[in-house]
Structures are given as structure tokens and as C-alpha cells.
Image (tube, rainbow, N blue to C red; front, top):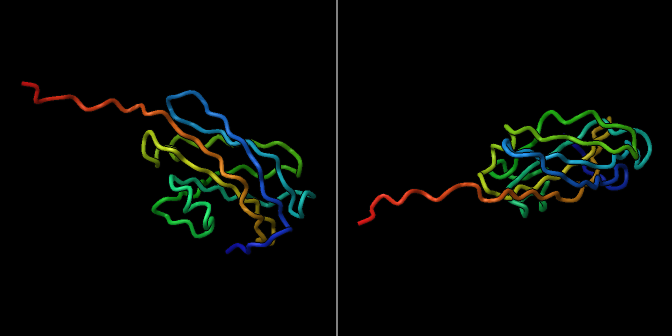
Length: 139
């Protein structure tokens, strides 16, 4: 269980870039925070993706499993001020409907279980790449 606190860890701000398709992929990039504000190194990250922005932003820790996926395999945090990236695996992206918009938020957690506030919401929208069905009853 994580303790949500303000001030000990600073929210992470990040941007994202899209890798080539297929497969669909997202690379998130952020500036690392420390385990004590902008000093030191956080212990680990919690990254959540969702196709329901309101649910994700309203309650990061209680986001409904029907809409949210906690992404495993996050990298070990680097020292505060360092730029870090993570490519979300295609098997995670495939959990979301095709042609959907997916939202991501990340939290840094220190060695005592203190969690910072969630960073900004990164947004990735894939174009509609599903063709219409065939017309089979033309007369």
C-alpha cells in the first residue's frame, strides 16, 4: 500500500513520442524526481494507462480495473534531474481497443512507500486503421 503525500515527491512531467507502426508503441519521456523532492533518487515508478481519462485523473490509485492497466516493467529510477524514457510494450497497448485514445499517468514512490502526486496526463490517439466491413447484400 502506498501513502499519498504532498511535498515529499514532486509530480513527474513527461512527454511522449510515437514509434513506427506496426506494432503500435508509445515511448514516454520524463525528468526524474528524487526521493526527497528534487534530491536523491526515487525507489520506483507506478505507471497506469487508461482509455477513460476522467476515471484515471479522478482517482489514480482507485482507477477501475475495467478501464485502467498498471504497466509492469518500469525502469529503475535515475537520479533527480535526469531524463528517462520507457517504451510501453505492444502487449500492453494491445489491451486497449484499436483506434482508441489512451491516457497515461506516472507516480514516483520512495523507499518508504511515500508516493508523489501523479504527473500530467500523456495522451496518445491512434488513427482509425480498421476498414469498414464488406457490403454483402448488394442487389
